[in-house]
Image 1 (cartoon, rainbow, N blue to C red):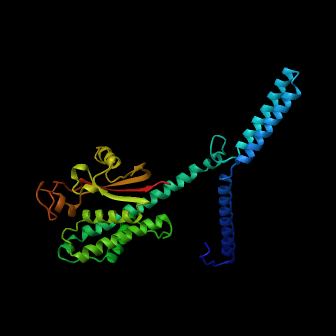
Image 2 (image 1 turned 135 degrees about the vertical axis):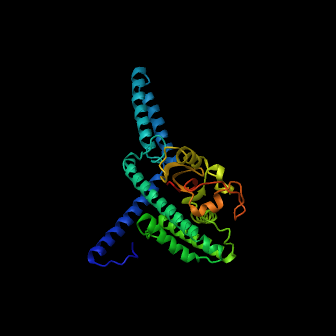
Image 3 (image 1 turned 180 degrees about the vertical axis):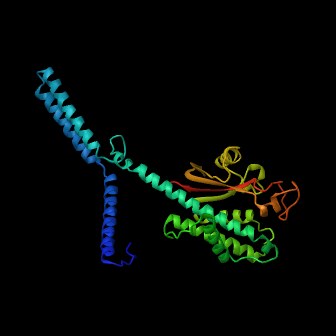
Length: 332
């Protein structure tokens, strides 16, 4: 906030107010931490209980000749002591235990926050998967050039992928704050695309650099960069898996077999759900991929024949489900 340069008096005033609000929020946080750790120490408890015992003994001695009055007096004072203990105990670690202050008021605003976060996660995953699909399409279009030993640089591929993204989605790839989690994820994917392409170009291993290999390597590189936030993976129906790390997990398999391969599923529609991912709760999206003309050179007919990468052709036909791009963002 302080790094922004106001262009008008109104912006300068707003900047000052926002900074003050942030400072107040930090002070409130410090106060809450201090209160949350406050407790009634043993000296206070000892003094209270000793005073109560002394008073009870004194009451019993005063009414020693009248058992009824002694019993009633002792019961009344003991009740008062119990109420005092309860009141003091409620201020011992006030945010934990049965007598703690509950976050009921805060929970009232959580549904709105959850909706906002869900919308944000959905938007970011659409950007990530759409950009990866765009880059994959560019690699598919460039197969003839790469077979001839000519390849794009990583930087050229990123620019072509951005252009393809705009062509496929109807809007330019957004510029997100690189310091935000969302911006870091998008930047990490662009870096992964560039690095994977440059490594393949430098090694000269372009003949086997097919779209599936490219996508797998980018997903792997992306996860190594921002795996604490998000996950991207190339997968496919279990019977089409060639590379074991691409094997669908339980959720991905359910989406592929229960939705994408079902007769009533609208071709091209994606599935999304809050589900477990690597032992954590995550917002997940999986997008089906269908065989295009360039895919059939490796995945088409005749079934069982050797392709250019050394794999066995699956006998797929144009438009058949050939794979899926799975992505997820871990929930807070």
